[in-house]
Amino acid sequence: MTRQRSVTAGGAALLLAATLVCWGCNGSSMPAAADPAGGAPTALVVQAAPVRAQEWIVTVPISGTLRSQSNVEVKAEVGGRLIQTLFEEGDSVAPGQVLAEIDPTNYQLARNQTQTALEVAEAGLGRVQVTLEHAQREKERADNLLRTGGITEKDHLAAATSVKEAETQLRLAEAQCNQARAALAIAEKALKDCRITSPAGGRVQQKFYHTGSLLVPGSSICTLVDNTRLELECSVPSYQLREVSAGQLASFTTPTWGERRFQGRVHSINPMVDAQSRSVKVILKISNPGEDLRGGMFARGEIVVRREARALVIPRSAFVAEEAESASGTVYVVEQGVARRRAVSVADSRKDLLFVRDGIREGDLVVVEIGPSLKDGTTVRPAAGKPTGR
Image (tube, rainbow, N blue to C red):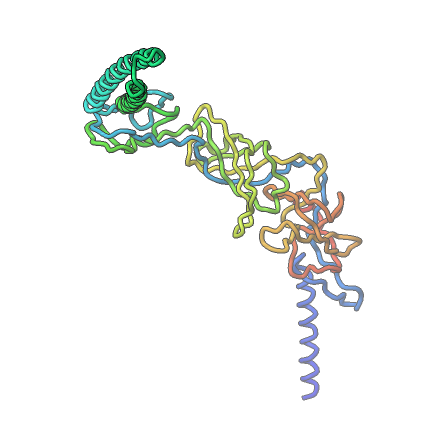
């Protein structure tokens, strides 16, 4: 009985030793195993790559929807029957071009009526002017007679009063003339507004009415957009805001044009950070003379903020971020056969590479496959062959 237990315990010990040996053979994800002879732990085999210095164009990623800088809704300023439209959706129009016309008959009649009213007012003004001139002559005659004693004071006062009354009538007649001129100007403008012209250049995005429609003042006729001048509104994380400034060049692509790249420049940066997304709104201005781009297209690209002649670059897989989307984190550097944890900050990223601002030096060997067994101080041995991430 005692012998059987002893054999069983020995078999268990051999099984455990075999398990540890196999565990140590599985590369970087396995912990270091004790040497069977009781020596130092077996080194953890890791994939590693050297830190390299190279030229790096620092960019800030952007994405958003293109929109026209000029989006104009053309409206009718007067009401009436639409007797003709001279455009269709998609047409290109120039500033001042006639787009449509409303029946001008009623507005022509109203203009004629106000013209007649002005003529009546001007005639009344002429009559009052004659009356004033007569009153002034009578006042001069009365002044002369008063000096010679040929007129009473009462008659002299009546002559002066007649002048004042005529002057008052003159001011009234002049005001009536001005009122009639203003009414005529309004009528002429309404008549002119029957011809609806384009307030800006662009293309017709949408047409709202057709010939024969009865419009009220303020009815929308069409919408004009100018795709030659576009802008892109995008959001930049606040931690990258210090890299962005007005005038910087941006490059982007759209799904419509595949890999073809377009350019724009940073125009404005919102002074406030959004409290929820912790990002800042940035506006890019884009010149598009050929109208290859259209408002509403989705765009994705980057703002070029600067160039680094000797940037320290590591594979993305070597970096462990403190939290999602964080620029701070750690890497493991192999120093004399031991993995040492280093705090680093990332300045930029591109596909599977990272530009590290500080925390490492050129030539450092960083672990690029980080498994759960890798800890600060773990004995490691870089795997033979071509390092990962080169």
